[in-house]
Image (cartoon, each protein chain N blue to C red):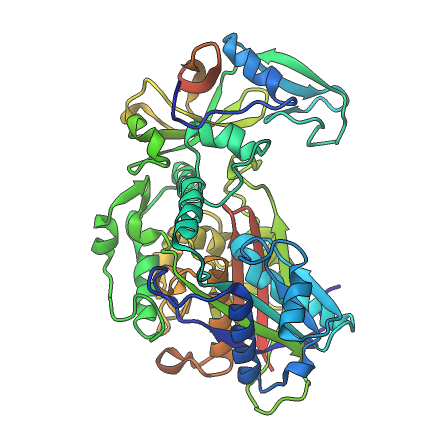
Length: 403
Length: 134
């Protein structure tokens, strides 16, 4: 069952994360076109080779419906496969396996996957109203008839911070909690960001004390354990690994994947500490034939430090309940024995909305291709990449191997 | 009136909100598989049966988790600072989102027994289900 290893990520492009207020603005159609063109150039391919498209619609400014057809028309693509993914931060990894599956089924030769995350150039008042409404309810559903509007918001259960905080509190009650170990996740990642010129916190080292002295937002989460939203975006191309290309950049073969969707809110999970990354990763590893210990790097979705901790455990990098010890005992930097989020993670690279998760995928590909500059790993054949949407609601895992 | 976000009952949830107004807690149980569930639905989320009954429960349960907020999650809730957001597991099984009231931070511990407090946010119109130590 699963993939045979015929599809690979052959090219990527990513905007440098920037502050929303000062980043360039463009209509989303134009961001998709620009990112797509940059990804084609990186892959050494022509637009005429693309015959599949995977995009988002929930975050698309100019259209909500029929989005693949509109983008296809705008880009001038004829498509054998048009797909929309709506899995929040898990969308990037989810796009990769859908594209690989379409290729291995023989539907497509090359699939363009894009998530744009700069603001559109729309009227300031409209934009402010839109931003304000998103801020107010955390961009989830506050519509009449939505369970979240009726049973969460009146009690102040809003957006992501408190959901992740409550997961962390339950973890603490069950397994114990070491705030310094949690802070070390952010600190090691910042070390990586300081070797990543495009990172939003490049050149700004961090200490454990800085994290623990930053403002408490919702216990036990400090401000510096919470990701900062940014403008940005990314695209990548999944193709038959032997497709004709004008450069010799190493293909990152998609060897395994998994996806698991539990609940929108962790409140309604049978046990909120059993996260979806467990079943998703188990499937991905089994499909690939590799084990967690085989990986040269782990690029783990990091909206919060607690997300990383639970992912390390549930993906099988360490036993359940021993994540804090694992973090204390291992060097998670690009120079260390367990290279993790080698670009800084979203905590230090910046989170470009739903494209934030693509930063992990792009970093894995750049490491595999040996193009990661100062932070390049010596062993860089195998990568684990995870994606997380909602509040540990939907998670995806990917195993990549350099050809 | 209140400027806080209030629930807007739907046809499917009205019996629940009406029960709170009467300081009683009615939730649904599946007639076919016996599953208790929350929030209200028109089908059982375990077996998809549409044969359901509303039943009164005590509301007593266990504190599954909580967090103390230091920044209001909504501007309209600034007067509730620090918010004590919580998830409670009813003795019948369902989990629900709530807030803890009448408790100091030091008194709260995960796993403790908790009991309902009916908060008439807008008397006669909106009652919320909050919790405190049993």
